[in-house]
Length: 612
Image 1 (cartoon, rainbow, N blue to C red):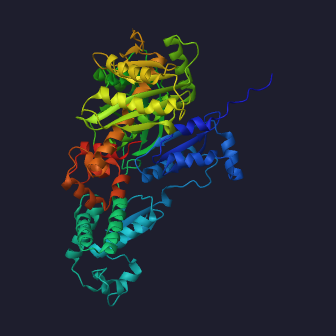
Image 2: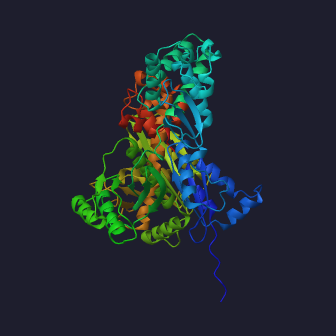
Image 3: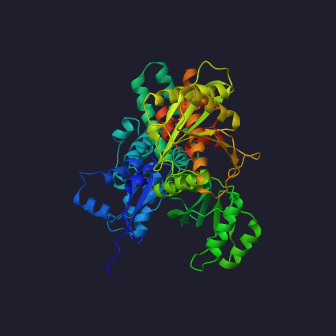
């Protein structure tokens, strides 16, 4: 009997759901073994380069031919992506990674505090010398540039011991005011030790004095129209930002499992991150099947019991960091204590490094669930389920959904999103700025948007859908019926989807166009999941368009449309980061370091700046 050929990897369907954020990818073969581990500033762009039609080297073509799956882990920054890549390569030793780096390949900042007059130096290699090591850092350029800046500000020597001990007069560094001259007694040991202490406080992330001073200088230079000097200062602030960047992938110590769950459109995802010795060594994504709409607390409780207590091969970690408090958490924790033989801590309110890990897990859970929902095979099954639920002769091929977004009637925007059997067709999405209607009149806004959309389609400027989904009840559905009657569009099925009294997912009511017959589908229905997905996507697209229009109308940036971010906070952000571009690149943790920005405000700013 001939061997069964393993299914090929559907790169087109995979790339359609890949995020454009930084992260790490693992390419797997048919047995699940890791072929290659890589990092990317933009995951979608990097992974797309592997699957182009031509121009690939022979080795890359051989790698691509063996790929059967790709696992993606999103990180907050390129720094975290590089360090996670390093950890995974050390653990997995994939055959297509030629260079297997170890800790010695990363640069450190070294302070020889065992000496009477310590030096501040660049260090790469083994850590055999006595002193303090700060790092590892991913960018040697940023380390060297920042050492140069620290030398200017704190005037700490950077020469080696042989040079230092054989000076009879100060060197050029003293003459240009980059060293305080401890070699010839130009500064007292006490004053020099104070400068060293300040530099180490900065490297530990416990002082903002230097960056605030640079920000003030940059602001003064810009006001004086000395833009060249302001740009130099901005670049220095950026370098300091990179050096001081908090690392979530590589930390100090601790073993833990991080679990975050996410629910959407009738599906659930639990993303698990494994931390050993303070370093992320891997991750795994689970998609538990939901028979009914359950809470995150019940979902995590069920997963913890099945994953850790039903298999002796899975060790129970000393700490489990969770996005939600699991149901019956105390009894569950006691059972895990018995299984481990030692104490186990459930943590939900965490700070610092653990909060960074949890944020990574939550981001990955959301992104992986979006990718899973948009999977081509899953999407096809949901279209077939919608055919059965509506009693159609054939599965629909194209769906459109409309939604309206505004703020108390200001800057209303209507969205139109399009799905086919491949998933969302974002190139066919449209937005309509709605003018000339009474503020807050959603019915009039819906009529205006529908009339503009389907007048064009009726003229042959696009493709009519098989089903038009209206986010709303009978009132909104009636507006669509009136517009279709006016335009004589009679070959499109109208369908309203209204939230139930509790407005919880899974309890929606379907309203059929024409007779307004109502139907309620089961919470595990693929048809309902499809309708929830397209409705949520229409809402997201409408809200994003409304925020952009409102910001433009007010003559302001997107940041100014965030409630609570006024002129003082915007100025503080600019001083801290040196420019709008750096704010867009910053993680939530970095934004929260600004003195006037709380953690919740940082999350709000990050969400607004990273709308996809």
